[in-house]
Image 1 (cartoon, helix red, strand yellow):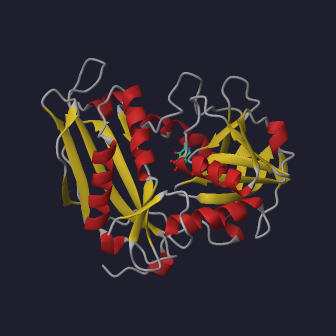
Image 2 (spheres, rainbow, N blue to C red; image 1 turned 30 degrees about the vertical axis):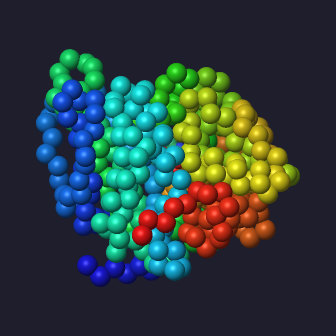
Length: 336
Ligand SMILES: Cc1ncc(COP(=O)(O)O)c(C=O)c1O
């Protein structure tokens, strides 16, 4: 297939190969996996994932540098996060080494699908799920780990990619003691309805509030959120209700390195409406400015564009991820 790299969007473009690894024996240990042609998998209707939602996913990207080499960004953090989620959902997880090896093999097998420098990235989607049959409610007796890939475009193109968000107080995404802090597949469909309604009204996404008080912001359906006021950058603390984003952590470290004051704490809606800037972070969106937030029919607009804190952070993070800037943090690894 001849790709037009200039028109890459966010839909799935299937690539040639995927990675498949299963547990064997007592269902606790992952055997050596293999690269296989991308395609459908066979699975029992009584698999744990279909019946009881025992499943996790991850998201990562491979980037092509200007010199043509391909690199990964903090990939061992994805391995640690899936392990954390697996512990919570009573699943075995691949070791960090197995995870990184599997990602590397998947990227190398699909190397010609990594877009040219600056045109996008190869999005990687690891899945971990109960594939064994189970009828009584409980963990499955066998697990599968699969990685597939798809080239995608850059979210941030220019100022026009700034998001407009809606705060609503009908649906909470996660609650204390729940699974908001892991990338469980069960966290996503419950917000489809409210996000679809917001999109139909012209919003890019929904900004969720904490379930306990409805007073503090938490995160957006697929990314974390930060607010900026003067030299202070604030983001909701990790209390098990928001995903510990790898981009979130990286932004905090870069911002501290730049000399900003960074606070992880409760962030009240009141303060968000009074911020200078707001921005979202995630593997898919990178660092994307928020143009406006609508709350109780009131729309507040924020500063976007070249002269913003979020743009300074974005240029730096993207530079590291794509190899255009020196990686003093030691976050990237070239794999070819
Ligand atoms: C709910 C949610 N929050 C935040 C993020 C951002 O996390 P990361 O920066 O690791 O991609 C994601 C995406 O992975 C997500 O699904």
